[in-house]
Length: 235
Image 1 (spheres, rainbow, N blue to C red):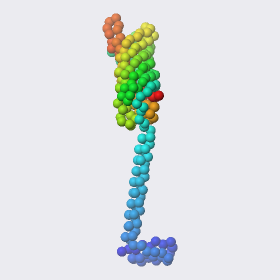
Image 2 (image 1 turned 120 degrees about the horizontal axis):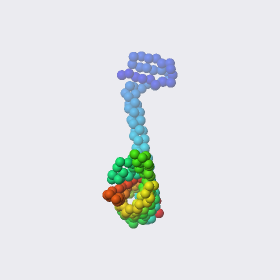
Image 3 (image 1 turned 30 degrees about the horizontal axis):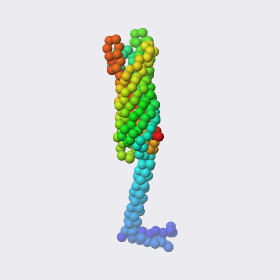
Image 4 (image 1 turned 60 degrees about the horizontal axis):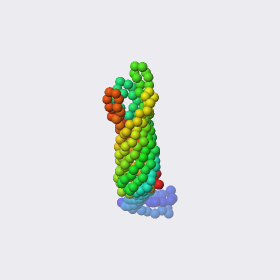
């Protein structure tokens, strides 16, 4: 069995089985191995404890930023996002820019955790139509005022909820060439909302607005689809 000497003095005497030095002390190979195992185990234990502490911190931090939403009360908020116009062939033969930016403000009342009603004032985007033969370009804006019933499915006390809406209102079609046109429209939508505090909610939602446009020749089922980010505050 080899013996190893731990010594502070650099002057040492070596043999085939013993290494020594003045004022030193001798340990066996088995003791060296045991100390190595203990050191390795200590490092692994430290890493495990560090990982557990990090996981605990992440869990507590994640829980801290989520809050159970208030079950009832008046609320108000806003929406902004991208829009797409579905023309049902109304602009066939024209160059039609069917994408835009929409925004809305809304307010309502939440009766309990699963049901609310709200009113919205929405800008549903600006679009353009170009005649490919003459190059004439006409712009038109769309806006709406509407009322909605909102159904809510909260995910326990996690601060998350799924919601959907059904609505009815009036859409205004304001064209450079033709003036204003108002039609009755229906609406439906679906979204998810997160509450970082009991009063404040942040949502991602998609809403569709549909109405019928009558011309001299036929009727067209027109629609506008919005994908929006929203924020609301429950008082």
